[in-house]
Amino acid sequence: MKMTFRWYGEDDPVTLDKIRQIPNMSGVVTAVYSVPVGEVWPQEDIDHLKEVVNAKGLEMEVIESVPVHEDIKLGRGDYKRYIENYKENIRRLAKAGVKCIVYNFMPVFDWTRSRLDQPLPDGSNALVYYKEDVDKLDPTKLALPGWDSSYTPDEMKGLIDAYKELGEEGLWKNLEYFIKEIIPVAIECDVNMAIHPDDPPWPIFGLPRIITCEANLDRFLALYDDPHHGLNLCSGSLGCSASNDYAAMVRKYGAMGRIHFAHVRNVKILPDGSFEESAHFSACGSLDIVEILKAYHDVGFKGYLRPDHGRMIWGETGKPGYGLYDRALGASYMNGIWETLEKLDK
Ligand SMILES: [Mn+2]
Image (cartoon, rainbow, N blue to C red):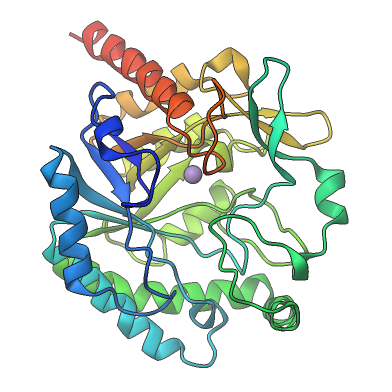
């Protein structure tokens, strides 16, 4: 396992100087953020990012994410050009030594929450998903950090309607087309493609969502029989559905060599199926983090792992879920578990 940390580039208040001081940090997970979704990333921007990261003694082997343009997911408009651009981004990133590229296939909205700073009893705050609040949201007027905010409400309504018409099977068809186009390039460049599951793993606002559960992960992996076609399993995304046995998924897909990148965080599932993001420590949420790491350890996981979202603690402000302190606590906690597993194994 290689411990990593997400870094949002040179504007991120969580600097590389801070990240490098977290014990056992091998590298950062980052992206070129200045290019519109779907376009080719300038090689000089990629190379510059790598130089800046390497100068601090950190690696840049994982890119999260190269986003997939909505036209590709909808199989309409300029999708063929966007797929060619995507292939070119794989080639350029491989040239810079990148080994793993993350993407997702969620229609319109990336992750969804009802509140980004819900106060918790201990005085911290965290992202939460309260079902009754989400049900009241108007998706044409929503904007959360990290989402593409370039759509007007009318364009958003048009997009949502197009996906409703496409439906789940239509989305599967477009995903299959995309995978069959890009994976040969990933093989040629020896880059592992890692899909991030849908967050949360159920349909929202009537939009189809397909990377949600074991049966669908099986179907996804069967689209292309090659280890470069793999997963970025995320405990907090799959794990907020009580029907997903996350540790069992780690054992299954880990043994197949198809997990390239692991996001590990804890969530507290509430009685109505809502959830709150919690500290990594097992007892703080509904997931058993020791069992999850043991599953990764048992399958001999050699991929990248990072603490995922953290709470905001100690008065820190910043990008929701991506402060320094709680993620650093999460990394250290997981380092401790991993070291213990390694030593007990000898
Ligand atoms: Mn994640």
